[in-house]
Length: 158
Image (cartoon, rainbow, N blue to C red; front, top):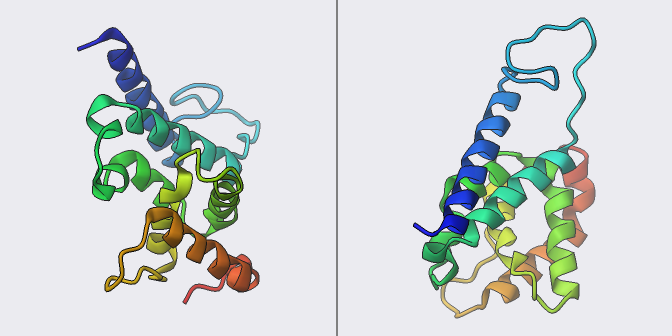
């Protein structure tokens, strides 16, 4: 295994472990298992998304993934699952990332985040009878968000 790949995989494992420990209240800023009378720092949903997104990008940069043409390779994995698991509170951040990628002519490759929106909301805008590119589907979710974000921002989940 090449050294760079090994380092990325170790970083991914460490990052996922820390996210898991933190989300279960096992780890804090003071260290694992350390109790304190001071309140723990609140991790914002944006911070959680940024961490999950970074881990997904590390995963996507591995040779086995980066040369794949299968959507499932990019979205059916633990790092992408961490993005989905953030749930509805992450929708504004995900949609902001999608919009930025669209504004950059989809050069960032973030168009696959539409799949997280689909999984979080249950809204399926993909037309199975037509061939649609991933960016085309992402644009449909951006439009859907512009029309529905007010109700989702208020905790609405249909």
